[in-house]
Amino acid sequence: MSFQEKHIELENRLRVAGPCSAADCVQWGQGRCSLVDKVVADAALPHTLPSNGLPRCGIRQTCRWFFQNDVRACHACPEVVRKPAQLYMEKS
Image (cartoon, rainbow, N blue to C red):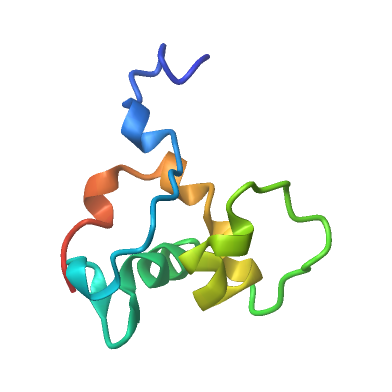
């Protein structure tokens, strides 16, 4: 079944990579993006993850999430598609 058939909104299917707004973003706190911290924590990833075999990614070189959480961010990134945006949009 396609995303469209499942009625999953477009913004919940895509990971876009605009420039990080840092302190101008409501998700910014203590010098880091709290959104990616929530996503990584919610993904319940194992303590160690392989860095080889990561999927191709056009934004990894400039990705705030990758910079902040390394391969854990890459493994958690698909959760952004699977989880409703509202779960991560509340300010901590």
